[in-house]
Length: 614
Ligand code: F6R
Image (tube, rainbow, N blue to C red):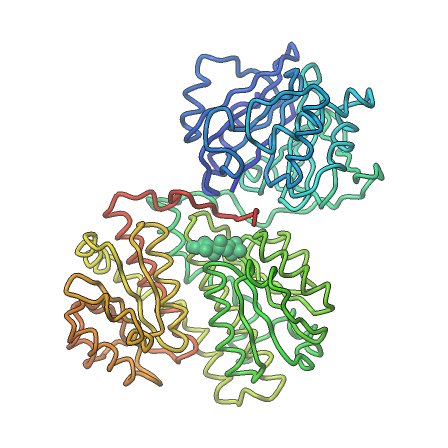
């Protein structure tokens, strides 16, 4: 979703801001803009609908000088994507410019109030209301910009991360947050601002994560000052960024998504590093060990997440119930938070989120905490809001995921869930020695098995070209591979815009089978174990209706091979580890179908990487 960049220091701000906006493009946006104060203290705002490249072009003949500025990529919520609705927004006098992520929920009430005070509005956005409110407060209290921002924010309901600058004040940039993430980078006599660390990492590794209801003053040649809305000084921790610039660049791949698919063996190794011990044949997750009494006494686990992370959570349900014998309920966070769910104080809520910023998942955590439940986060982004809001948790350590379509985040989330169920099951005595060893040894070799699948990329590319005609796809799986069917379908629809649905294979007879004809591609995930015979019957049902079958099978399979039109082989594994393998060919299939259809896979239309509004 929307991206924020800011700079104050001795360098020219524009190139830093534009580069920062490019780094944030992955979040998804529909317009971009920049505000700069030149050396005469004049405030210039430039903004355009469309890509950052449009903005650069637009600015070619403009005054883009200045060593302080703010910039923004907007993902429309209030008001259509347009030049005028793009950020930064000016106040009425054009003395103040503001960028904003989040939603001001009481903006209509505030707008009415400001209209009565003589303010007029040029846009339908909630953001323009906020900048006008700051100007109003400045007049009312005859105060500095910093105080005016504090006064204004204390009237605001909703979520915000903001950057504000003022005509004639090239020495100060104000930033604040509530609900939407905001990071300040600390350089040598310069500050950087970002909605995440990706626009900052190139310049400094020293960062401060702004907390809710904090207002920061970034003053040229002075130390960082942060106060809360009651004007009390807040001590801030300077943290060190743990990732490098190369991790957020494409590294020779044409797209981030492809790079991230191919990074999965390494990402899983990182995820298991120090946790899966090959010598001792042991899995140790400190987040679980430290809180084992909580897990031991838990009557129930609740899992809440959205999208791909929810699919990983569904695999988690199967894992926890099988290995730990703890009942699990899983629910999409947006539903969970609004249906007055029954939550007991001895429940454990596991929240899964790549970004750690998903608004609905964050709200589910707060709800569980309010009922006294213990909350556990599985996040990728270190220091993210969900990681901080939960009582404990495990990082996936997949490295930055830039492609909008989640790939390595999913496999590392599943790996964490496997390690959790093995650790808890071992402690509870519900996992026997043989099962435990199978899990440890299976995880140890999973990276090599994924490498083997990745070697089939060009074969999968060939298959994908045959199916670009399709307007619909069906994905079928059973057991642990039913969530993988859902994930395969989501991957395809979000980047290729082909409609796709995932089903538990046996559900097909209860409706979707009516869709099958000689045009319909059916992706069947059918590794050889457990209920293989059952899925074999499902494949036969598809075949007799002339559906075109793409099957994911275990190496050496002969029965499904005979029925399927196209086969992708995966190495042998145990049932519960198979999602880590079966999902990989589905990711590649979606990627290559989308490429063949000429889609923008890293920034699919209408999508945002980090969904910070509900
Ligand atoms: C799909 C995808 C989304 C996210 C969802 C949750 O490829 O990326 O469905 O999984 O928006 O995001 P996080 O995991 O950041 O909470």
